[in-house]
Image (cartoon, rainbow, N blue to C red; front, side, top):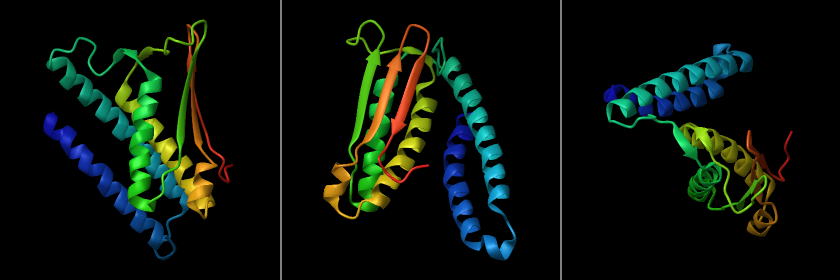
Length: 175
């Protein structure tokens, strides 16, 4: 099972390279954007489901009673870690790093960070993907390093006793 999990990590890069090539040869091969989007959606849903089940199994076998689920998951901390990783990626690829501001509010007592039962690894994966899009869009809009600092990406984590919401916004072109 561990070997299958490690093979899956390599699979992500292979699929990314294949989609990049497909994107550049799409006109010649007759593949539409709709076909590629549909295929990627199905692939990623299957990948996430398989990865989750395999990881849960390994965690339970290793003696963790809740497996990969953290009953006390701190979404603000997950967002901070994701932001740091995305900033490192931006620095590597563009040599510019947008500011990512993570704010946290909890109903009743703002000193306590919201917590909920969730899978931190998958939450981080989702947040990284969204932040990569926001940071890329921000960097594409900015021509000078000064401009980048004037357009921070904002992550707002809010919670009450029943729900947690995460809002990510930027000041790039957008939808």
